[in-house]
Length: 307
Ligand code: NAP
Image (tube, rainbow, N blue to C red; front, side, top):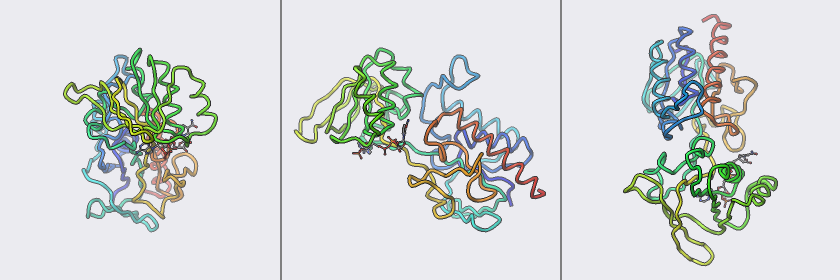
C-alpha cells in the first residue's frame, strides 16, 4: 500500500514527487508514455526561473527527477491503463499490475495534437513546435508559420508577430473555430498573412535537422507549392490524458479535470496538477507550482487521516 502515487513525470509530477518525498511519504511516480512530459520535447528553456543562461528542457526535467529520487521517490516505467477510484484504497492498473494507494496525484498532462506529417516528429525542437510562448523567441526576424483555426492558433500567431519577420497562418477551411475577438485581433495584425483552405503536406529538411520549408496544398484549387519557413508552430489543440479516469473524475467536455478548489478533484484524496487541469497557462513553472500544491494537499490529507 502506497501513501502517494503520482501519475506523470513532467514538471507537475516531478515537483509533486520532490515535495512528497521530502515529507517522507516515499511517493511512487508512474512515468507514463511520454516520460518527462512536454519539456522532454523542447530544446532550450529560457523562462524557467533560476537558469540565467537557460537550460535544455530534457535536462531540466531529468534534474527534477534526480532531485526527487535523492529524497526517496521511486519511478516506475509504464502507463496507467485503468483505475478504480470510487473505493478506498484507490487502485491503479499499470500495464497489468494493480497498485494500491491512499492518495493519488494526477499529473498526466495534456499531449499536443500533431498533424501527423511524415517529417513532423523528427523536427520537433528543431523548428517544429507546439508552444509559441516556449519557442517564439528563437525566431527573431525569421519566417514563421502557424497551423490551426482555433483560439490557440490566433493567440500564437499574434504572439509570434513580436518576433517573426512574417507570420503565415494556415487553416484547412474558410470558417474559423476561433472566437470573434481573437480572430479580429489576428485579422487586424498587419504581420499575419492568412492562407485559407490549405493543408500542410510535409515539413523539411530532416537532412539538415532544421526546418527550412513546407509543402502546402490548397484544398479548393488543388495547387501544390513550397514555402520557405524557419519556425513551424502546430496549434491544433491538446488532448488531456484523462481517458483512464473516465466516469470517475469529473472533467469538462474536452476531458480537462474540473478543479474543486486548490488541487482538489471531485474525489477526496485524489488531486490534480499541471496541464491535465490547465488549458490556459500550460507552462513548466505553473505546472511545477501546481505539483507543489497537490503535494501539500496530499500530505495534509494523509495527516488528517492519521497516516
Ligand atoms: P480548437 O478550438 O479545438 O481548434 C483546433 C483548430 O485546429 C481547429 O480550427 C481545427 O480545424 C484545427 N485542426 C484540428 N486538427 C487539424 C488537422 N489535423 N489539420 C489541420 N487543422 C486541424 O483548439 P484550440 O485552439 O487549442 O482551443 C482549445 C480551447 O481552448 C478552446 O475552447 C479555446 O477557446 C480555448 N482557448 C482560449 C484561449 C483564450 O481565450 N485566450 C486561447 C487558447 C485556447 P477545424 O476548425 O477545421 O476543425
